[in-house]
Image 1: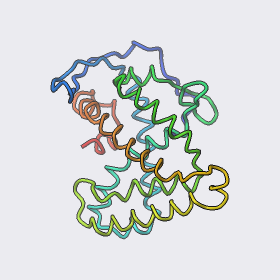
Image 2 (image 1 turned 60 degrees about the vertical axis):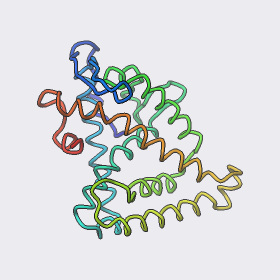
Image 3 (image 1 turned 30 degrees about the horizontal axis):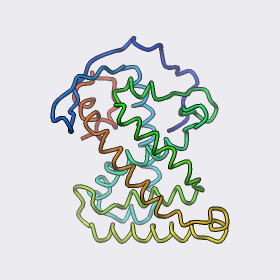
Length: 236
């Protein structure tokens, strides 16, 4: 999540309600979901800023820029939603139970997320993820390395050079393990946190997978002007 303009305040709820139809994978049917297009637009703008930040970040990684363009695009499309979710966790205040910007000009909770179409099952799982993330107490280097491990995932759809990408992931995972096992980290946590990080990365994937039916519905059913062009492209 990125810094939000203080002048941008979310208007009162219920002023932009609309109904979309979202696939329920478990029930194998389509369900009508009421969403607030004002919240959808607001969160979409934040996500788009996050995508731009992620793209600028990965362009600074030599291994990434050495890949063919097709693989670069495929990795960004797959990893960006996970990276945004990981970044959002850094803005979550466990005492307030809200996502809070650095200067506290704007904050929002799970009620706003539900009004954006997210299911209770998703938000409940998100709450568990946020607790696990907080318990890891990641330093800046660890956070960056987790992003790189997420980026270089060779099982993404549409990749050509999977061997090279898998090699990069193994390299950064090894660096992450060494970083998490430095003497000062061992003294502070008295445990190997890497298995917890691997579990966290798996949970991020599950959350993004759970979000995809809503993402597809929003892409197809939102009126023009609600979703930024870059975000719509990422949803394809």
